[in-house]
Image (cartoon, rainbow, N blue to C red; front, side, top):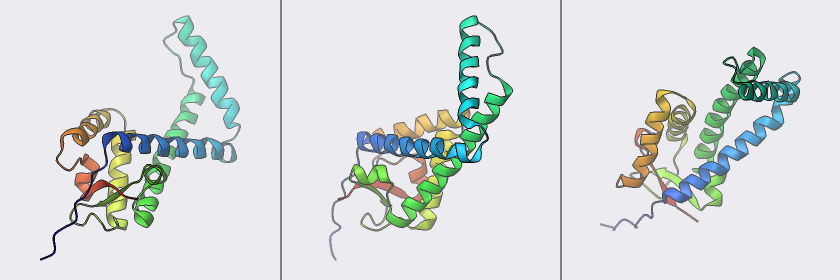
Length: 172
């Protein structure tokens, strides 16, 4: 019987920085692409932001215009969709996102840490991660608990990792 090679689990810090890098990349891509798909995007965002700020300073209760709400809803749903697709593609193809690659970590199956995640687990993990991190409301409370699991769970798994039967490991 061959002994299993030891697996070094990724730290909370590495996972956090990789997530920040991925979120900045996704946000940059969305903000750069929105003017091509949403009419007068920059002006609508800027005027909505100025109106919000002015109403906030004046103490008004009705601080957000309908148009600003509409544009922000488009951005939010686009962010969710792009996050799922980005995560599923990266995990399905390479078992890591670009942020994870920069930090030398990767997602692997729990039972075979040297293997790739594959499409099913990559999609499941991306869907769960996106729903928890961007779902709002109750999902944010569950997401906070999920993040805390990385600190105390024996395999440093979050809820999306448990669902997809994955773990995040250090990999060159």
